[in-house]
Length: 231
Image (cartoon, rainbow, N blue to C red; front, top):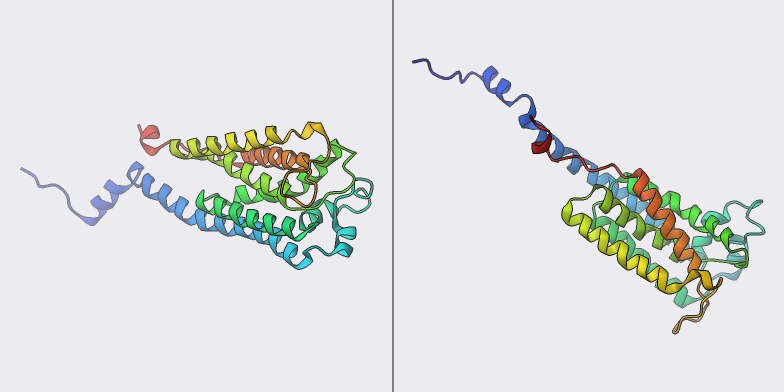
């Protein structure tokens, strides 16, 4: 009776092919995740840090805030509007919200595509305000932050595991309910209790729509499990 071949060559041959696929997939995920985390945090930092330096400076608001009449000749306003805040409460609330959105993306282990989606949603959030020309001026992070939350929800729904898709569905449902409650179609400004400035609900909606659309389009569809593709 012949003994099984235990030569190194035979062992290497036995491990070639599909048997290594799970390990390859695991390594791919492990190497991609830190890049995505860094990219997501970078977008968040570019949003938050200038806001802290600009704070509530009225001179900066004049140059940087969103103004639809000036935007065609001053396109930077589609980005810089996020850094403008009209009161200390406005600034503090948005900075806290920004930290939470960054933490949400890190916890969800989003990849670099999600960070790109958030970055692209940033100017589109403000350009979308052209839908309501009565809104003559806008500043603040909240619209873009809603976009970040929508990106995470879309990515989880698009490429997450079953458990992650459930989390993404909950996030999407809560976000959608909030937007409906704010009723942006009722006018350019709302005056919620406890705030010392008016709020522009449409910015939350345009941010969420841009984030959800870009997050979904740029997300890499989840690969089927190895056991489902090995014949």
